[in-house]
Image (cartoon, rainbow, N blue to C red; front, side, top):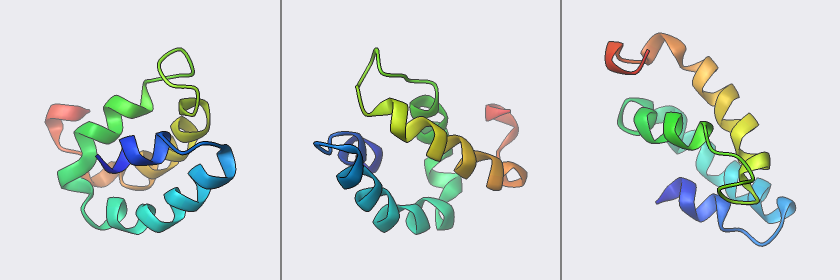
Length: 74
């Protein structure tokens, strides 16, 4: 739901504002959200227009937490 709320923002500025307020929670609880992050990271503008803005942010988040990825998602 967190990532859906981010991607549903009406424009890139609002998306980034929502991302800023959610990013710390996604870092802190990465183990809980890792599979959802991986799923959304693979989406693009063909799925949701704002995914082109969200995917790079998620890729960075995923890389920053790569040591925390469980073996099921590597």
